[in-house]
Length: 279
Image (cartoon, rainbow, N blue to C red; front, side, top):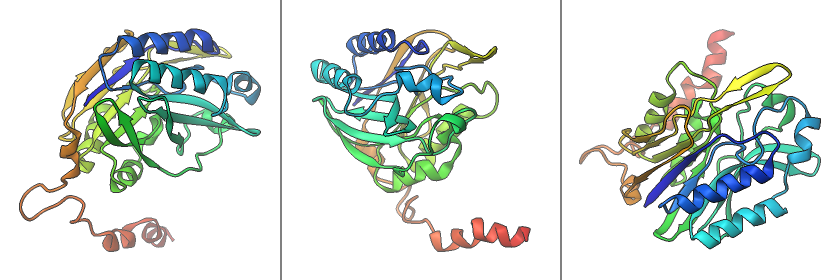
């Protein structure tokens, strides 16, 4: 299964140009699945509802239909960040279209970052896993968005539901710390493939600039980075994975990283236990 991360610099508020970039990158990618950044069609840096509402889109709107048409025409699955309007509410979402153009995956970001807390609702769909049909077969897929990567429970929730691939559309602004090492850990501890697609470029709002990290990465279930993009260039990275190998969680004849879990022990050391220690 060939998976691509299509890294580029969306233009804030310019849906037409961003959609054309997406269509061009999908057409050029020799892959079964194309993953794009967070909020790839609208840009990212919004501080108020009045700024984002003109570009917010409904799941049944023209933009979703246009992405579906690209997926069907190219016979490639597409996973992409999406600024979703639902009634009077707004969500930082990710959506997935199969190779026939059918919308099969929908996730709303649970862990909001920075000004996202001012303009987006917290995700209310949990961490769904879905079958993503590609021209090379079906893939059990889950999605996270950017800041979700810091929370191991999120990736574990997807893996426990059978995810073979975790796609992570992102707009990372952090240049220090353990980003890639943590992503490698998420892949390794859950024995899943991780497709982390970040954006490049920068956006300015009210005199404040955000510069995005780039460095998209495709990570094997062994934790190895197979492909990594540059920090500044528009580029597509592609790696070929045998996703069937993610289904076997055994590490030797005695141990299995999922069946060896002891949730009954973890709960006593969880949030309730920590509260008792604090109080």
